Amino acid sequence: MADTTSRIIIIGSSAAGLSAAQEARKTSPEATITLISEEPHLPYHRPSLTEYIGDESVERRPQFLLQPAGWFAAQRIDLRRGIRAAGIDRQSRQVLLVSGELLPFDRLVLAVGAQPFVPMADALSRENVFAVRTLDDARRVAQCADRSHTAVIIGGGLLGLEAANALLKKKLTVTVVEMADRALPMQLDPEGSRFFERIVAASGVRLRLGVQTERIAGDTRATAVVFRSSEELPADMIIFSIGVRARVDLARSAGLTVNKGVVVNERMETSASDIYAAGDCAEFGRGVQLWMPAVRQGSVAGRNAAGGDAVFVAEDAPVVLKVFGTQLYSVGDIGRDPQVRYDTFRRMDEAAGTYQVVYGRDGRLVGGVLIGDIRRAGAISKGIPQGLAFTEAERLLAG
Ligand SMILES: Cc1cc2nc3c(=O)[nH]c(=O)nc-3n(C[C@H](O)[C@H](O)[C@H](O)COP(=O)(O)OP(=O)(O)OC[C@H]3O[C@@H](n4cnc5c(N)ncnc54)[C@H](O)[C@@H]3O)c2cc1C
Image 1 (tube, protein in one colour):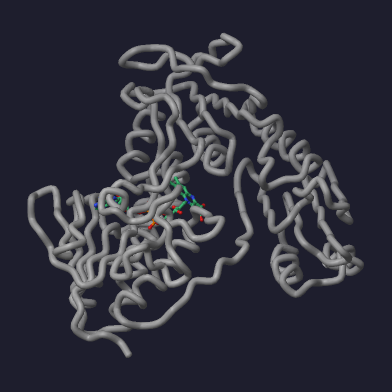
Image 2: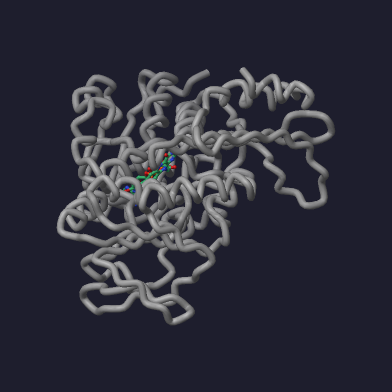
């Protein structure tokens, strides 16, 4: 039975926070729902920010805003924008805002997300060094790109490569610096990496593999990235893209159990039963910091906070990357365990720019990679949970 009288506060109004509010309202028509966001904007689609760097018109697309301004009032959700929650008093069940205002709650949802990891503490103080997390960050990067000729992106993961692709659109000369010795080692098998590296090279982006960044040269303005080898790579602008860390400060100071993220169970309950956490700030199992899991976790937290009953079931989500005029899809286990003898079926056509591989284990399909033509992605994604016989793999790729 839904609890019809509760005051629900949700801190953070992005993927997890907004879906928590939405689901809480569906579950309890009577609850008082307050959504607190330190960002001044209406909730927006954060994954579009990389594209925004290369094309600011992204902001005007109808799908960029997650809900129109009028939706919040219609749903009786009090969206408080541009204000940060500074603390949680668990004893008196109140949230303290930076303004000094205290907001009482019966149930609290933490949906405060993550922040970019930048290992050099002072790096971001330079006017031309960035990490992209918010719309305001993306605006600053886009403006700097308009005045720049060369960019270095530190980190060759999915977001780093997307940023490189966006800066190419602005005609910058782009170098991506990656510590690993091959492209996208988490998403590609070694042959796939080499195939993809040739596509990156053909796009004009320089991918420097196996290099470690030591420091940034320049004081108020960065002039170069300096590698451990002492080599200096000059740059008009630098973007860090080496991962994120869950925002755990509020939870930690409220005495909640925190590991890498705020520890939650499958109901998204933290160590305090009246406080939930969801999305990038939460830690459930292995954890992925991606948009759709954050939306689904937010729904679970919102429903439970409103007196409903829901559990989160993790799914192995495929990765899709669209950059440098190609598309890349990767799912499942692509030969990661060195103790296992995998079956593989691979074919590639360099001229057509297509690469396909599927991996099998104990006679069953367990993973795959497609580059160029990803039309068989759905069939692979379906085949893995169904335990499709690996002998069917060739037929699967043929379509
Ligand atoms: C540039 C970029 C590209 C991405 N591309 C993809 C992609 O292609 N696919 C994909 O699946 N994922 C992508 N992601 C990751 C995805 O955006 C995140 O997994 C998702 O946004 C997590 O949602 P969340 O609601 O948990 O946290 P967030 O989206 O980080 O939202 C948390 C919100 O809480 C606010 N907040 C934090 N602390 C407080 C406080 N104390 N008081 C008030 N407000 C607070 C923050 O300012 C923020 O607005 C991308 C992320 C970035 C930055």
